Amino acid sequence: MSMNQTEYNILGCTIRVKSDEDKNNKALAAINLLRDEIDKVKEKNSSLKDSDLAVLSALNLASRCLDTEADYKDSVFALKSGIEDALQYVEKVSPGSMQSFS
Image (cartoon, rainbow, N blue to C red; front, top):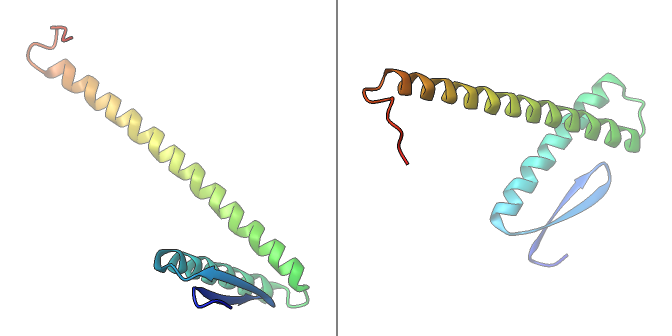
């Protein structure tokens, strides 16, 4: 292993990450998230093979990611709609709102 890398072990697989501080912190957070998910899946069914644990854990995390993405899109849409409504209200009640600006 080079001095510019950090090694992590997940279900017997060695993962090497360049030791750039930002990448290392993000990698460590992702690895801890995956390990936690693997532990949750393993609690429900301790007889699963490591490959099955890995796939089920990845699918669970991907599903949560998709849910979060959908929630984010809904929130952005609601925010945009609220801003448009507020702008229409401001234009309606503002003095000189009948004037056109170029």
